[in-house]
Amino acid sequence: MSAAAIARRGDPVESIDTPALVVDLDAMERNLATMAAFARQHRVRLRPHAKMHKSAAIARLQMAAGAVGVCVQKTSEAEALAAAGVGDIYISNEVIDRAKLERVAALAAGVRLAIAVDSLVGVERLAAAMARTGQAIDVFVEVDVGHGRCGVAPAAAGELAQQVVAHAPPEGGLRFAGLQAYHGAAQHVRSVAEREAAAHHAAAQARAAQAAIGALGIACPLVTGAGTGTFAFDVASGVWGELQAGSYLFMDRDYADNDVASAAPRFEHALFVKSRVVSRGAAHAVIDAGHKSHAIDSGPPRLWQRRGTWANGGDEHGIVRPEAGGDASTLPALGDTVWLVPGHCDPTVNLHDRYVVVRGGLATGVVEAVWPIEARGCVA
Image (cartoon, rainbow, N blue to C red; front, top):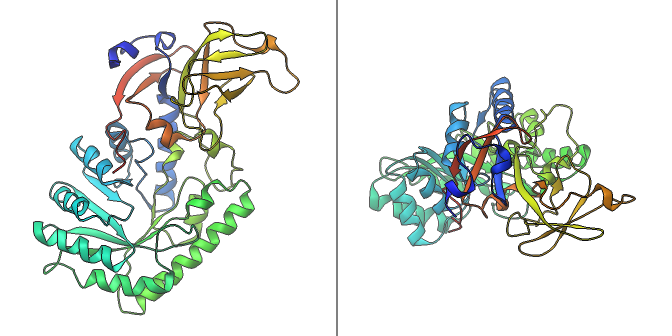
């Protein structure tokens, strides 16, 4: 379906075809300003994760508000955003495949580029690819600070940093830029106390990695990482100099379920799936947004400003039922609009080709723009 068929600039919200991925621009701009102000106040760099929104238009807004650049997780995401004009990109992930590393090296010719490594093989292959192009790239050594996914043990960070430095310019193309330290599992721990404890553990691990690097006489310019669930704790530790939080901009249902720390700013829901009731039963309503329209890996969406619960009706349908103790009189009627707050924003975005951007609220606003999601489907 063409963008014009979904919505056009100036159209009322009600006319947006369903299902559609809709951004409440007023709420998103408030979230954008809030995080930018937090970073300025605490004198840390902000490099939000564009794997969340996959949009060059949004990346440019973030950088205009003070972000130094954006993060991505995939080579193809970096290529898509660079082609759309984003000029400072960090691939905060390991790339081992030689063909992909050739693409990374080629990309470094046109944008400021950084990448993470966690193995000697990764360093050597990256260095070989960069040598063939004569380009340079910033390199972060990833350390496992508690997630148990990628990253070396803190004690091994010095040795790996030493290998990066061995390929420094002018002879080599690798610039040691610091540490990648991200505790993904801590982001969705619900209680403040448990999330803070996980963040403190991550800080201790990052400090140990810094010490291992310093013991070899190597300066560690920066520790980058943090996320929407822990950034306030990470800043308070004094370890992180750059924040990679991304989901704050849209605030999906899962992040909103976290208890909010007193030192952390509040963010609003800004991403929605617009759906419509297409069938009614005696005790349920059927909407046209199934799990092809929004991701349910982190649980179901939440109905926005409407009573009821969503249940999975399959690829193309959602089932809306009364809340516990409610009755069918609370359900939407045939043809009614039902707004959903996605359970997980990142994979929800990856299901759509474009955002319909609304100014003036979901009830009476109008379409301000339709933005392409340039990095949609970029998983390689």
